[in-house]
Image 1 (cartoon, rainbow, N blue to C red):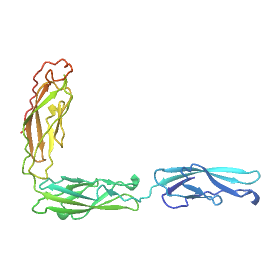
Image 2: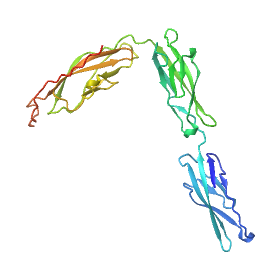
Image 3: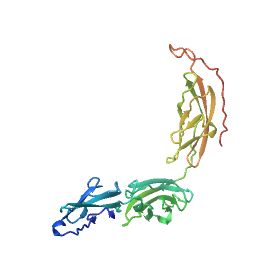
Image 4: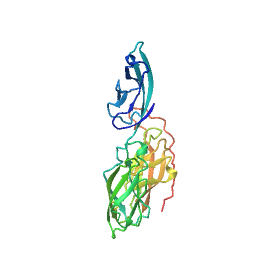
Length: 318
């Protein structure tokens, strides 16, 4: 006996039992004997109505109840049936933006199609009541300056000019795919600023690294410093790929990292910093040297490798 149950109040199903014997032997008593995990259901022993006694959720997607009907006759008789209950999700959770509102700064003259923001939406209902989401810009999109895809990606539809308009306040809506359809709202404030006019300066420098023992253990050796007069620029650091097996630089913080088992000697590293418009490079010279004999305290120093000069020259980018 299959039953599909929405997350709504009872009754769920009525189990009908009948006895062909006479009135003295046809008093039927119904009970649930198995499958009632957590006891969310009860059955009226006389009417056979299966009802919910507490709210259901989607943690358990279905139940298989064994219902027994017994007759207190002479002799007593017992019969059973199976009731399969599938718990279906009601669309009772609206989709929710990951933030209540957004604040974005964008430089003018970005190309059409430039990504302004990727919206993240969460829906606690099952997938058939959630995806695909429907995104809409309700108000604030003056001159149709922005577009939003059904993946929640906001992009520029025109080249923004700060002197024409330097501020937008978009009112956004997202709706789910359930029935009834539920939705949520958010605001995104967009400030348009001047494009970058100053390249980020970065200075060449020399770094001296000491190896305690025959091999260098690796680690952070320096933080590359770069400044930018354009206040809202985001700086990104990179290094020539030829050196990535020996050194690396963190893209956001500029931490320069030397890998393990470097040979004693000199290394020339070309590091680049970019603000998305300008890129500036500088050569950082690293000297890896071994700690001199007698500097190990009372410990006997390990046999020292013959010192060699290793120069890896990387062409500087223009």
